[in-house]
Length: 200
Image (cartoon, rainbow, N blue to C red; front, top):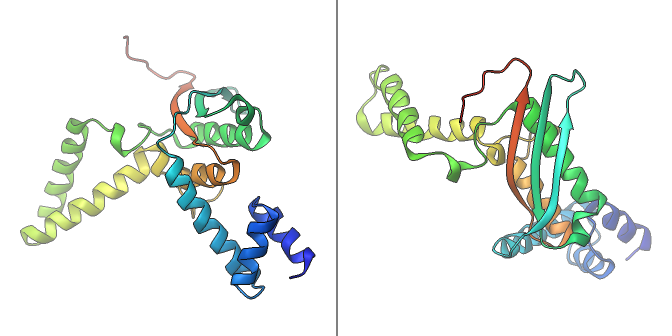
């Protein structure tokens, strides 16, 4: 296998020399297929790492260019070594910038309070029922609209602002696969000048 091809695959995926060579051998030198093999392997490895404790990391601040929107984001990983890498800090910056732009209400689907889910479902149910469709179809419409609600309201489910073909969660998993550690978005706060804030 050509060393230039292996080098190109390494640059694209961040995978090791032997892993790239194996993937290219497996795919008869097809770069795109080898990249897909490595991405799938990385995602599988990332899923295995999800349960590991992530107690290191950074609190990243992002101030939008107009100085009217700011974000504080806590991004965690397993070791201080990874917390200092460019890839990890770029991820923190990209997610904070995404929060500034798209203003998610929740971190993930699991963070949406049950009463909020029920309220949304009720609104969707009434909207769907008004179309005159039968009950089972109404419920399918409600589930579809609920999925869209999660995509719009939850940070990890939102399409990433720089690459809308992938979710923020997929972006995190790609960096997990590259750095070999569990990475978690712990929390975020978005500030906007003139915004009404509820007293706590």
